[in-house]
Amino acid sequence: MFRHWFNLFIIIAVFAVLAMTGCESGPSQESSAPKEITQPALPKEKLDQPPVKPVIRKEGNQVYVDLTAQVTAIEIAKGYTYHAWTFNGTVPGPVLRVKEGDTIHLTLRNLDPNLPHSMDMHAVQAAPSKHFIDVNPGEDGTFKYKADHPGVFMYHCGTKPVLQHLANGMYGMIIVEPAEGYPTDKIVDREYTIVQSEFYKENDLQAFSEGEPTHVVFNGSTEAMKDQPFTAKAGDRVRFYVVNTGPNHVSSFHIVGAIMDRVYLDGNPQNVLQGMQTVLLPAGGGAVIETEVNEEGEYMIVTHQFNDADRGATATLSVTRQLQE
Image 1: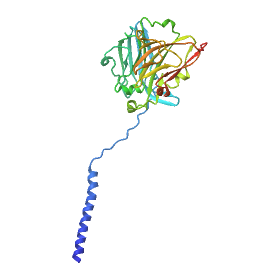
Image 2 (image 1 turned 60 degrees about the vertical axis):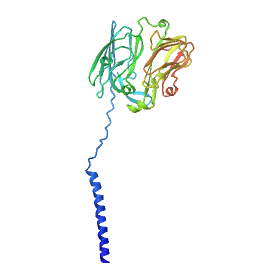
Image 3 (image 1 turned 60 degrees about the horizontal axis):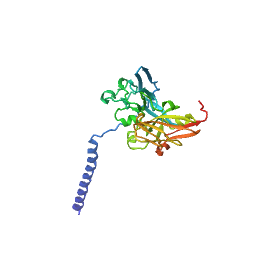
Image 4 (image 1 turned 90 degrees about the horizontal axis):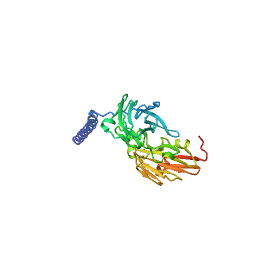
């Protein structure tokens, strides 16, 4: 009997030792393996660089343009601030205007301390590997090219990933006036520019690529064209230079209550359409659009993609009998 209990005690003791050894050896082996320590990413300081005034001067048919790449906080809707990547602290960047045949001497200065930026100019024909190259932080680059084709064009940063630089605000409009002008120049009373673009979650490449915009805007704001509407007087012919910079959505440009009786696609005087109700502008496309407003009142300007109009892409053309300057 004693031997039976003694043997049972030995068996229990052996199992206990094995169990303890197993329990100790597991954590011991696990703790001996190296663990990867993930350091939490520190938020980058959000820059708000004061806008630098562009320098644009013309000497005969030579046009000298100094633009600055910088990061500036802008208000794209009331109470909604976006730390945008910009040309000269505004979105869109400065409107450039040259004549067909002019030579553009563009100097791009990069004040962004974190990233290179560049210039992709839709208005010219030039080898991108030579003329659209990156300018590193704190440096500047000068590029020379001819503006041989008339029209209304987009310019933008072409640094990779292009989507990120575009969606963060690096774009603008350049007008290349036809050497002989437009056939309707003598009867146009008013001229305005409109740049349509989209904003997404701030500096979020996945949102830029896969998401829907939080705001779609005319001239960089959901409110600017409402607080300060375009103006005309009854009987005026009004010309709009329009570019859709995207980066992702098309624009179905429409003036409520008006017929666009003369449309030059991409602003080329040879690309004429007449009697248009809506003008389709792809991302990266534009048009010169004219209409006559014969009755006083308020005319809404929208993209007829109404989900984007609801996100802010609207403006007002205010027509009065006696124009109030």
